[in-house]
Image 1 (cartoon, rainbow, N blue to C red):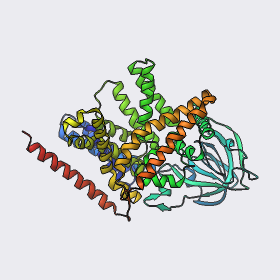
Image 2: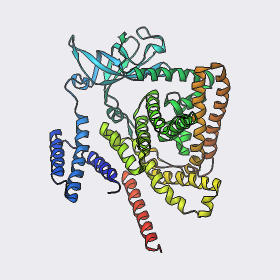
Image 3: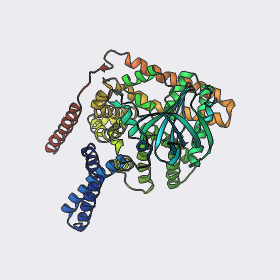
Image 4: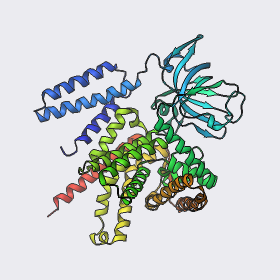
Length: 511
């Protein structure tokens, strides 16, 4: 079988989708997984039976992991108290880098103890904490740096279940649930907040967050608030201060992916690291290992949220193949990355960013060469024309592949996306490189920062102007009504049938 991991990934995903809403007990899935796996080993020498039984085991394994993720321990905080409480007291440790937006700060706290009926009991689970009036307020810390990763806190506030409001097809409650967060703790003026000490469980993560703060400090000091918001989103994954109108323009241009750290960003960062290590004469195999380690650190630096982790796993899978000197099969590598991510959190399959990330890479790899082959070979051999054809083929393939999902989730159809990404994607290398240069050189030798900041400011303004000019073109984008997901599935079914028919037709006419 040429693509064994592709089949396993599809069956694993099908198991997650098929059994997502069932009420079947966990032990049933565990038993079926065990039985299918056992019989596949028994019939290992009979290829057909072995393959069928193994696929069955993988199917039920997907369902098992999904069901297991839905089961909370008896000491989980979501099971110990009602979904709405007037006031609770708890002790826990901040588990991420707190995010500030004006006078509001939010962070995730890993709960250790909860007070119930005057008794403190051990508990588990994570809670999203939202602190209002963080600057000022009688019982709240007065400085932003009072909340840091690893702080052990005593908190009192109102605990409630996330609201199930939706924007398009985005459901906030499900979004948090898929990250293992079932409750929100609201702290307002008069709430009790006491720092009990430090409990830095991951020193590398703590160091990454400290680096992140220093980089943000350099960016804020040397760029305008407008450019700061955009650059922080592009290289640090922090979008709290990104103007809403900027995001709206990027959505209409079909380039909104540039403000969410994705495979594009990780690819650019990996390219810069590999090039730098090659220039300083680091041998090939150590070069790949160092790149993988630095990408992991960059993942922590940006907060290690799901899209960044996903892109990092994809990049690491490819780099590890190069390290082993294996011929890279992108379909198997992509499937392996998906399996790793879904095994860790099966709910990722239902996230918009997961679907867009993997489908975009798949269509670029599968469809772009077919589009490129439609152009005369003579043109492809001319360097600059060949480059334009390659960029067009990649952009057009990604647009065709993501068109129905973009229409379904964002209710917009943007033909201008093809041209926009031909310009913006290569240009992003300049933005990322200049942004990191500003942040790193600014930390090491601050007198150079204003000069680097001026050039970075110019690059970001050009980026914004390009997107603004493109969406001003008549017919650049069309706003759509809500469409049924059935049409999305129908589009992909017809798309695959069309290309299979085209390939068969070409094969029959091949001399």
